[in-house]
Image (cartoon, rainbow, N blue to C red; front, side, top):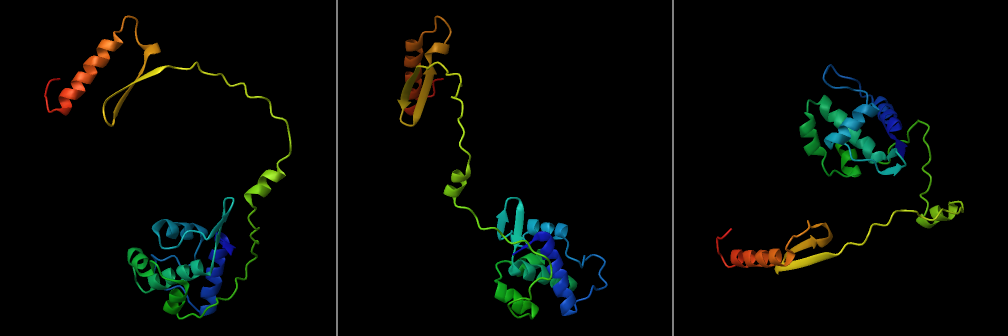
Length: 191
């Protein structure tokens, strides 16, 4: 696996080995750059990275074949939207056949960083230094007493009686709400 910058270099090296040279097209950027490869990824022409280690993305030989196929088809005059349809779902083998290449591809001549194996979740916690944490001093909210009314199956009204204004007639309100819901459910049109 290689990083994005290395994928761009690997692509250029392989194009040079194959004798692919830049054509007359002024609209096609021949050299694959990291910025161009990111653009291809956002368009769906290039698969997302195969692996991430932190913020570093790593790519495989299939990604290289996708880059080569994009360039090959662009130089043949294809538009990016047509290329997207042509490359969608292609396997590494079918991409190699499309380009007339045999697998495995030659290794990149760029210094690559090895991908460190992923640590098990339990290893992470074992590495944390022991330290005493202060007891939490979060303020505790007073407990609220909510009243519930279910005038109709699937309809529930919660009432915080501690926040109602003084003199509010809760029982009368609940009765009127129940009557209103019952009328609406029975097809009445009273507001």
